[in-house]
Image (tube, rainbow, N blue to C red; front, side, top):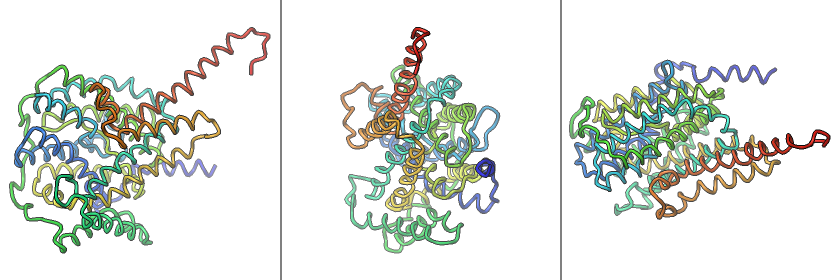
Length: 455
């Protein structure tokens, strides 16, 4: 009985309203956590296309504005759209390789935008079928995927810790790594305090303090913050009207499947952390919000949207489960998109500081996955095989990025992300071991003569 009471109390935790001040403070923490992740794809694509700094700024502003709007839709939700969970949306990293390939093979941003629009509409139509596969996501699958999300993000944190740019002279400089470790130490120190508010704001405070120390020591540069416009509206089709190229669309269709798989995994992960039941309907609403914002995104100059895994870690580590906190983060992101000056201020945070925070955040995602895997029955050797193989499959592209280099592009798109590799592997092995083999066994038993005792 006591157990039942506990779950009822937990159920409402995502609908809890914490008040304006806390919403803003905790929302800002979400924004800083995902900032490096949300600006990375547009930065990579801007350099692939060869945009100047002003145009790159517009691409970044668009990413922030659309990410904020998508986060509001996902967290607050309207009928049929939005999972109403503390999920932060932003430009999906899964599509970066495919979009870079479209650009490398002679396409431009219009081809990329056209492909994203078609792929997102395709995803939107596919959602009702996709949401029904919740039955194929038991703890053995979700645990593998959540663990892999954390592990796959660790290299991102390590890159930031080393300075972010492997061609820069200070790449891997002990000073960079010391700054990252200082950030980590401050975050850990705040986590040791008895004050719950300071504990929950540990990541934000750690990043602010480490940035101030870096500035005093001359490792943070805020000189460019006031250069350029202070306010700018998002522009429609600034980079040209979308163009539709068959190969580009095909590549993005695969990406949309990967994004939907990852978002499904993130919704399930958030459900586990918040302690709220996740139904097929809820996943469907979440995926529809995901794909609708992805379809509209190119009109404003951004790319495919997906749920952000690093923020799943923040919800787990802070224990703040309110979706209104994430909605506040969405509003902050939209404001950042309208105020390039604030974007430049946040961009001036040294990457090693983000790396130090990333280490504990991404590790927390992996730890949440391990907690889910702890619920799995390992007396059944099939589960052990599913977990072992799926995690190993997910590690392949992380350990060696050239592993699939000789494979066709569609295959690379599916498997170059450790998250989707582990997800596909876990789903297929779970289907094989727990559904197909059992079904065969049932058929075999049913076809036995009636006088034979069945086991």
